[in-house]
Amino acid sequence: MLAYPTGGALVVALTYPVIYYFLDPKGLRKYPIPSVAAITPLWQMYHNWYGEKYIAVDKAHKRVGKVVRLGPNHVSFSSPQAFKDIYGHGTTVRKDIFYDNQAAGNPNMADATDKEVHRNKRRNLAHVFSPGKITEMEPRVMQVVRKLLRAVEMKSRGLRIADTDRFPVKDGVFDLRPWLNMFSYDAITNVFWSQTYGFLDRGDDDCPAERSDGTITTVHAMHTFHTGAAHSVLVGHLSPFWYDLVRNKILGWTDRTKCGNTFTDMARYLAHRRLESPPPEPDLFSNLPTSPTEKRETPMSDREIIAESSVMLNAGNDTTQTSLTNIMFYLAGHPAAQKKLRSILRESLDPEQIPVAPYETLRHISYLRAVIDESFRMQAPLGTGLPRLTTKPIVIDGESIPAGVTVSAQTWSLHRREDLFRHANEWIPERWLPYWEESTETERQNLKEYVLPFSLGPRACIGRNLAYMEISICIAALVLAFEWELPEKGQVLRHHERFNCNPIELPIRAKYLL
Image (tube, rainbow, N blue to C red; front, side, top):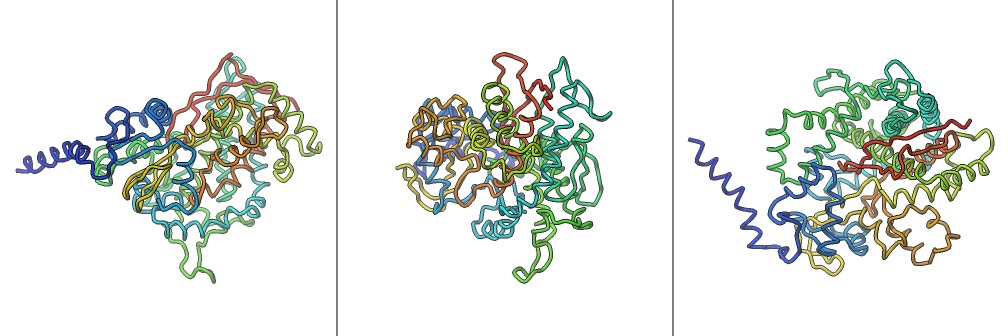
C-alpha cells in the first residue's frame, strides 16, 4: 500500500532538480557549471569524498571563469572583491544551512546561522580569547612544547617514548604529523580545561569520552575527529530533509556517522570533569558564564557548554596541527630559510629562553612571523570557500545575486593569485619583509588585505590570538632544538580536505642540536 506514495515521492525528488534548473527562478542558469553541479550536490559530494574539493573548485574557476555554479543553489566567486562583498564587515549574508546541519539543533558560536544568536554567543566568548587571557595561558603552552621536544628527541634517536608508542621510526625517518596533532590536543586541553590528554607522554591518542547516558568509553581522538569531520562535510551540503535521511537514517550505523557523535562525547567528558573539579588556577574555561553573574542572570546550559567545548576542541586541535605540519614541511624543504630562522632566533633570545621562548619575545621577531604567514598564504588550514546565504538581493563583484542563494569564495585560490602576489606558487617568507628586493607597496597592501587564513569580518576566527601564540612558541622551539630534513628529493606534502585541508603524513628526519 505504501509503494505508490513512496515511489511518487522518489520520482518527485529525482525530477524536481531538473525542472528547477530549467525554470531557473533565481537566474543562476547563466553561470557556467562543472559537470552536473547545477542539478545536484553530488559534484561537491564527490570531491568532498576524495578530499580535494578546493582543488576541483580552483580548476573550475580557471577553466570557466571567476563565477562558477557549484550546486543547484550555490555560486562560487574567485575575485578579491568578492571576498570583501561576501565575508567583510557590513555584509548582509549569513552563514548557510550547511552550518545548521553541523549544529544538529544545538548551535555553538562557530555554526550559529542567526546573527543575533551568534552575536550573543560571541559576546560570551570574546573575553575568553582576549590578548590578556591568552598571555596567562603561555606557561601551559610552553609546558606542552617541552613535552613535544622530549618526544621528538627520542624519535630522532630511533627510540620509542613509551611502551604505548604506536608511531615507529624507520631508517631515522618518522612521521611528524601525528606528533604535532598530539601536541595540539594536549595544548588545547591544558589551556581550556586544565586536563591535558597526555598523548605526548604515551605516544598514543587514546582518550576518554562520555556518552549522553553517562557511560565512559575510550576512543582514538585523531581517527574520531578526522572521520567525523569528513562525514559532516560530505553530507553537509544537503537540504535538511536529505541530510537527516542520509546521515542519521541511511548512514547512521556507519563508523563515519558514529565518529561525529563520539567527538561530542569527547567534549562532554572534558566539560563535565572540569565542572566537577575546578582547577586551583584559572584556565580559559573559567571565563565561560557557567553560573549566574551580574551581567548574565541565566548561565549557559549543559547543552551550550558541551557545544562550545566541542568547537574549542575541534578548532583547537585541527587548525593548529594543520598549520604546524605545513610550516615544518616548508622549513624542512628550504634549508637556507630554516638556517636563517635558527640564526635569527639565537641572536634574538637570551640563553635561558632557548629552546622554549615566551611569546612576548617571539612575536617581535619579524622573520618568524614571516615564515608563519607565508605558510598560511601557501597552504591555509581552510582551503575551500565558507558557504554564506544571501538574505536579500546583493551585488558581489558586479554580479546581482538574489536572496536565498548560497555564495562562497575560497581562500586557497585567493592566496595563489599571480595578480596579487609575485611568484604566488613559491614559498618566500621574505615577501613579508620590507627589505625584499621585489617588494612593492601594492604587494605589501595585498598581503595585508588578501591573506586571510582566519577569514575576515564578524565571523573571523575568534581564536587566532591563541593560534599565533601556540604556533610561534612551537615552531621556534622545534627549529632551535633540531635540524630538519626531508628524506626524499622533491618530496610533496599531500593533503586530504575535510573541513580543513589536513596533511596526510610528513616523513622527516630530525637531528638534535642541544
